[in-house]
Image (cartoon, rainbow, N blue to C red; front, side):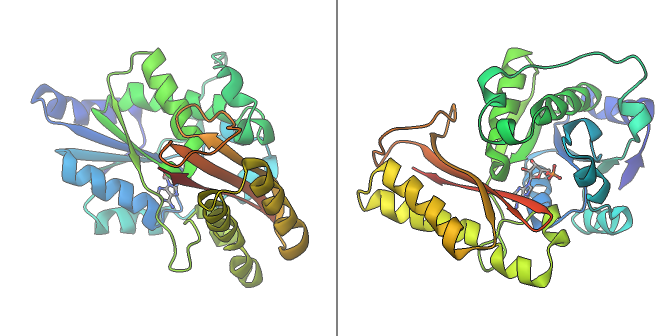
Length: 281
Ligand code: AMP
């Protein structure tokens, strides 16, 4: 695997592939790689001539300084994992390369910043968009792979790509889960053993909500059920549970089987914030 930490070196290396019209697949990450990240890379290596992964813990997307400080960093383990699945290129820039003194650019995603993750993590999507736009311009990928685990991020990146005419196809990849159903996340490393056991409450609540909707219960009563579940039966402090259309993420008032609907949830477990979602089609 070729490893670059500078923009010029990476661009020069990729140029010869671009000149030969080879396809480049790209997976931006913040590292502490798990099977979820590796799945994105595997999907890319199957579909492209060359796969580039980036690892950068992006400070502008953290609204909580402690979260940034505690975010797991495991670069040598990450490199070994990437080599193990034949990733072609790794880009690991440092903060001074990606953000320079005097930078002033700022994105605004309107209503997407006011709901769910946007509401609970002010500024988060501005930071994600900024880093993804920079990385797209550096790598110029043909395809970029994002997990549906971060559904709102995926929606925002699709908007970013369409509105700025980035010539890149955004490919969603299904959430990879542990055998008990917990969505894999780098933040799971920060859970104590007891918290790790409790963390499955998120997917359990989503599954129960799904069953209730299919059984004909109203959106309102399912939302009430989930709120009560977290009040009485879980260590997780629920931040939100929303039932939304999967494309624009607007709240829906009534559920009709066959429509693309997503159930989105977030909660705080000890010091760790976890999110998950389930799509119903
Ligand atoms: P992160 O390192 O958390 O910024 O994630 C990098 C990419 O991996 C994003 O597109 C995430 O949506 C994706 N991702 C994170 N967890 C999972 C998972 N469990 N399954 C599939 N993709 C994931």
